[in-house]
Amino acid sequence: MIQRETAEPVIKYLHGLTYDGVLSSEEIWNLAQWLNQQPKKILEAWPANELVKALNSAFADNELTAGEMDELAQLMITIEQLWMEFAPRVGEHHEEEKEEVVAAAPGKPHKAALPEFDFSTTLEGGMAVELKKHTCTCNEWLENRTDFSEGDFRRFCPHMAKAYSRLKAAESAKLDPAFDAFVEDYRSRGKGTSVDEVWQVADLKAGKILYATSPTKEWVDVYAPGRSGYQRYGYNRKEHRWAYGETPRQIARDIPALFARATANEGTRTED
Ligand SMILES: [Zn+2]
Image 1 (cartoon, rainbow, N blue to C red):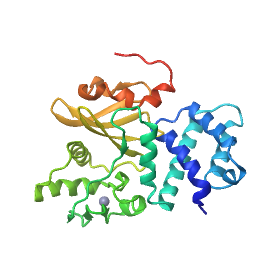
Image 2 (image 1 turned 180 degrees about the vertical axis):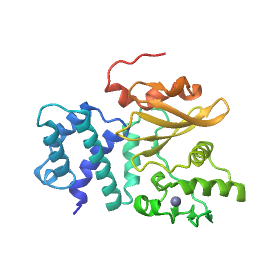
Image 3 (image 1 turned 180 degrees about the horizontal axis):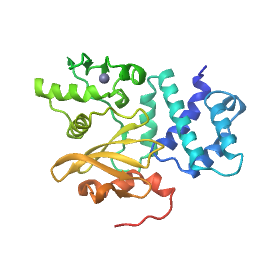
Image 4 (image 1 turned 120 degrees about the vertical axis):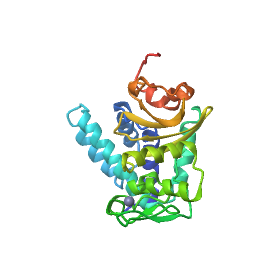
């Protein structure tokens, strides 16, 4: 049973931690300290009770291993998912907090939403996809994606990429260039989004960028403007480097600031 009164303060704290997509051991120690200061009423209720149990077991040997970090990150994802089901309008609160957290960062990232169109189509194989509420009749969508709130990128199964592509052909609809690059990339790879990742948008000087973060992953997929239009880049938030030596020059300068909280926790980094 989820009670908003006892859950919301904890969820708010977790959002501050997981927004930058990298969970550090320092953040986990801080979480443990913060929980220690909370009243009993909160500690005995969900989700604090589950966090306390997991932290006690992780800290039992006074050492935090990579495996224990992964388990804690997974627990936080599960908590977030349950909370989203309990409070579907939480997205709005979420955005406000994010803006506070990143007030000093460029572009103020916010949660990305799938664009809505009055368009439905049936694909080869019989899957019916519609792009208003972003539903699909495939088993994978019904099993994994139906609980995410409308517009959430985690509702994006492989068939949705095809549907957006058809929409462009049929109605010459214009998609935002970052989203267009995302659709074409997922279509060419025959992929749906990972349900462990949260998609964000940031408006930088050189243009809008779209990227996916997960507390368990070092690599971030970034759709950003490049030499010949938007394309996908990979950025390693821990090592502060771009994949394949390829850097989206127009936005590269803004990226470390965007992920500043991650860099601040991990000491010095080299400029190149
Ligand atoms: Zn599907």
